[in-house]
Image (cartoon, rainbow, N blue to C red; front, side, top):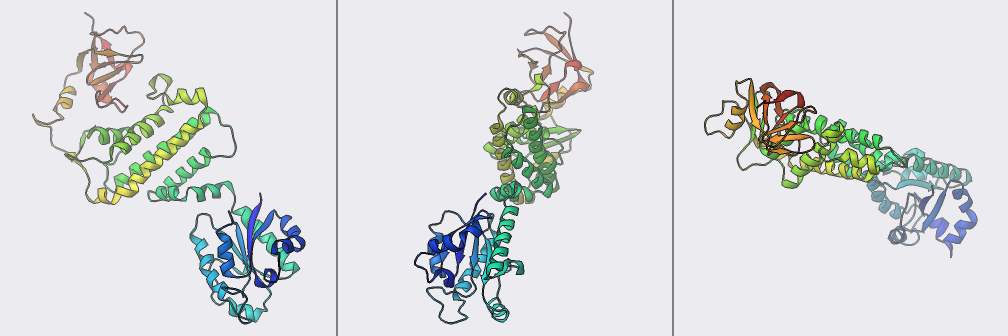
Length: 418
């Protein structure tokens, strides 16, 4: 890989009618051996700034110590140009794609100490070289080594997505680690991946929300302490969650997320990531089928960015929601007028409940509020009466949980014989 260099030195370039030609004759071979090319030649700071506006990209800049802001140095120790350069050098410390900076000087040790009395913190002694053949060779080797080390795939991804990784870091270091793994895979340079590998990496997206985001929301009181995305999705979308003897409810006229983020959380992150863990007849949005048919890495990339949108929601809202939570825990039994009465009546002291089939699809039969998985040996028709084991009723965490809040597995019901 080739790297592009800027070089400010009034002595080398200031007296030349064609700095580029002089560079090609005297220095180019040394730089080319290391895949480096000097593309910016400046004798003072003003010239450097003017050329920076025209140069498409720089990987490193070499600075002389004594050069002027404009034109020739006014006296032997004139470092007015280097004073201007110091803020530029320091600014690279906080940039996601920093330009590496080096010093090449012919000054003796005493003069060098005076001129470097305010040396930028990101210039070390190893970045300062003598202006002679040996020093030039050492400098070129060091530049090449530094740029190669800074150009690894992992570092490029971290620089490219620094803001997104910072979002994950506001939740936890584990969250940042998971997101980096997601991004490394999504934009890998290795080329082809199998459907199984794509499905496997989707689990990282679920881990970001389930093992990191939900934990953080529980710690800060933004949500109850929940262990699954299905539980959180049900509370966020429907406003009520019954869980192991607890009833959690969003306050009247309150919402945890806006409509867009609620959709991303429930449909994209919960349902789509859930697909990779279920058998074929339990897929909600058929993402597994799609990946196996098309080997589509782009759908995974899209899921990564939509997960990042959820991290953005947390960063933007966590302080407000932790100070004034929008949910409450209902500890008292539901009364006659309670919106939970219907649900509590269903789960009664009876050993079973009976319902009639209202709707049928390929894998389930439905009788509001139940979604019942078919048993392959049963014959179902509209109106067929079904007896449901009370202990087999669980929360439905799928996309249709609003209409059918309860789920019954295939072995928890039977057909009522006429």
